[in-house]
Image (tube, rainbow, N blue to C red):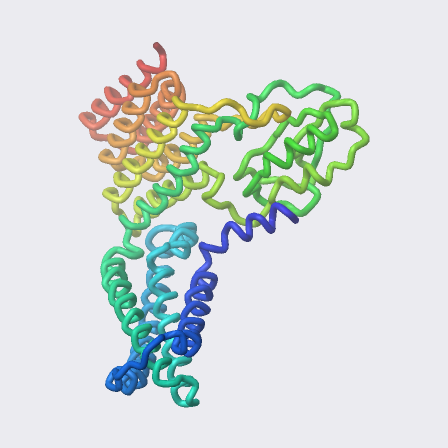
Length: 420
């Protein structure tokens, strides 16, 4: 429960309603505070024009912002639908968390509420002369704010929900997760070892789901408290169910302690997330490419763009792996993320759906060659296996001999690196 609450709180800034609520509360406070700040002005102002026109300005703002909000919501809903149909539904979470769209909608809603509260206050005689002047200057500030927001929002609409935008969003989220796992192998714990035969299994205590988060600090503290060693058997993204072991405990108290605190350190949800799950981002990228390679779409260019994005993601992981930090958790043996699994998540599906497109197969071999030659110790073996698999799939479909010869030559270069 504690981990679920922490996760919920950490995700609040990604929620549209949360940011809109903060902007709205701030806008209402600004409109109400004008009357409180007015008496603090040490002199009487003669700005009768400003105090008299503020009501008309607020009325214009209220009516225009209502139309802008409706327009913005319709654009966002349309972009979400387009992303679902052209890319993959898994990209919607990244679009919902977009800062610029949230800021735009929140600013428009906050301005609308600011205007409504200001109009109500003026109609009720809530403001004196100095309060109306303060409200006038607050209104000018709001106008400057929404002008900048509108300009930024208009620029955002030119790319929001487009294919390149979706690929870039998934690439950023995937690179972020891969970078963390590269810098903190085994989830910042000790490397995996053979689990002792007398170790006690701690199983999932709820219905099946996907591991989305691990509280490693809580696991470390609990293990220290009971003087046990933890052997993690799962990592974020893994499907778990009641019969599957989440981890194993070894120590004198392992058989008698209550496993609930260890279970509480593992959050299981229905859907995968990009936060701690680097494989999920690679899966989403491959889904975008697979849809582009479907007979109904037939867009190999998008698949090639996805391959380039995946290459950059793997490069980020390799660079981070070269600068790893010392393990932070000394009582936990973390899980290892296999390079073969990462390659399978990404390259295998694209090779399968693009088996008959020589340009896609050429780019697959080129990306694998780049990874194998640049970081041979890390990628060469997995790249050789992926290259051979992609070549076999292509040979089953492609019949043009020069294309076959070219693909064989490209694959041979990748395999040769893996055999060195």
